[in-house]
Image (cartoon, rainbow, N blue to C red; front, side, top):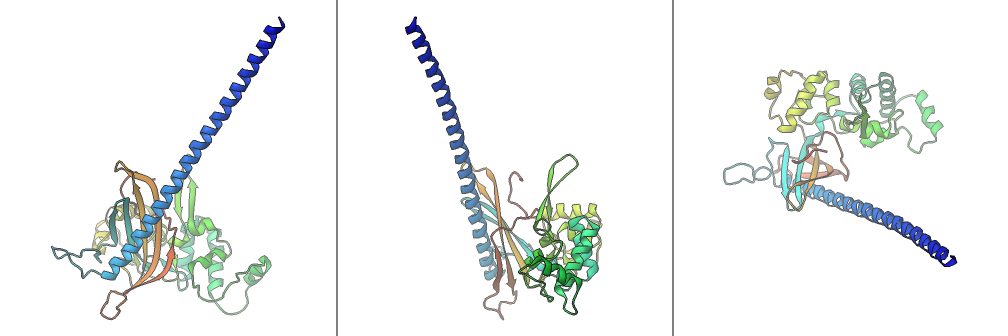
Length: 332
């Protein structure tokens, strides 16, 4: 009888140990699978990042060669000034480099207060917040007598005080009263059903190299277009059309029934090159992994006077934007 009890106890212990070992094995297997997926995602993200930076470097080289290099049909072989979009194919994936003139953005240093207010309101969606931020930008960029806002920054103990002069870098806006990283870089907002939608930030609308008008219709953000008086329905039509093919002249825009004297096609010497890259899977299908990089460059089209026609002013390893044109495949 005692032997049977001992055997029953031993069997029970074995069953408990088996269950415990099974739970440990399942936990380890789940952890290993999760870590393997995480490592794969990180690896693909890094590869996509290098693909984007490689496309950016190739775009700079194409600009350096200029449109004078022709193919067998007499067309520009690498870069066509009439097409602000370069499509590139690599063994590991595809990339699209957009050439966005800085005239597609509002000049933060010289813009009238009314234009600044309209842009900030379009981005923030809050009238009171827009007035506060506009007041902060005007205070930051203007010299002159002391202002009550000086006390605000002093009270924060901030290392970065208002320069009371022109902004040298657009990132200075992050120190202006009322501007948050979400407003500056962009964020996701919730819709009525709880879905998340990307929303651009102030860096898509403002620039230290920008314009006070007219603005490039191919590069202007939807918020800036709305601030210029284009109605929301026409903004959506413009964005949808230029995602398929850039506008070559204003006649195409007017042909859509959109007339606005503050819009144009093209820019001056300051441009942003934004490269968006998508990996290709081993079976040839496009991956969902997408990365972007960008550079602000100064480009002189008159290469006879400038033997080095391209000068890189700023480089950004991460240039995420909801307005980026992505290579073909599932849009994520």
